[in-house]
Length: 444
Image (cartoon, rainbow, N blue to C red; front, side, top):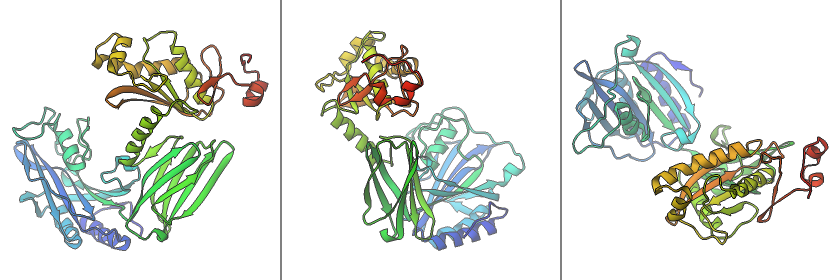
């Protein structure tokens, strides 16, 4: 079933919504209604809300009164009741958690939220935004900008922060406006199947699928971008976890989970080796990888460096390793780790930066950001993370394999990574095209 771009009335929207849900068999058991109301000109009125359909019941937070802001939640089941509840609600004829909501809604627009990191549920979502009628009348609508506090209740930076958290789970919302001010959003998560987790390591791709339909109804489709063309793979799923080989010179991987109906139920893009996706497990895998790599010694992709004072001549060694990783298959530089894998800890960090622990940690990332940007040419793709390993701070400088080789320092010195060493390359074998073009390589 195809949907129109916009619905101009409540009846048309809710009728098509009912048909859309039933034809896709998402398996919802009901839906949770969430509404934020704010005090406007002395009257408590609708500010923003959502209906989230789910396969399993969600525990609702009791009615919460901040004085000028009121939060309401109510779970309605079964699915048919939740769907039947929506039309009169959008017409201003329903109560939520005992509170009358009289606002009426006009046009409804919809879109896909394909990036699961920005979804509420971790699944691909259809989002239908119904517009409150007072927006069409250009009525004054303002949110309180002062801190939102009440004794025994969670404090918020402002009303927008509270609405973003209570309705959608956005705990770090920093805008003065709420996410969908003056709108009611109906959210349909794609609960049939999804790409749950994935990790790309040199030579291999690991993907796990979460599904509520038979595995034989699904196919994993992979597009691999290579320097000279591409490669595709079509994989009939026999198990939820898949391990596939990937060429070492792969640059980007796109993954699609396709249903037998032809629909793409989930997709992910991995921009570089060591990319990972998923809500929880990849983070655990990344941390486990860090533990493994600081325990098992230096190699093609791992280098250890100790904390050193900024502008110390030993920074040249960090630049050298970054250049080498960019010129080969990428890797990570762990700063705060001795050559034998011993973690230095906070005292060594403070001694190197001549600062207290808080200021020293804050100075780490900006310093290394500038170190790479100013000294590696061209600047490769890289990422900096400050992590706690066994309660000791470690900076992880991840350098991706470059697409504009050769990389060098400011003096045009070039290195490549071989084993646990950074070495000067033989330009005739390592960079023949650049050598012929006249790039200045030092003599071996």
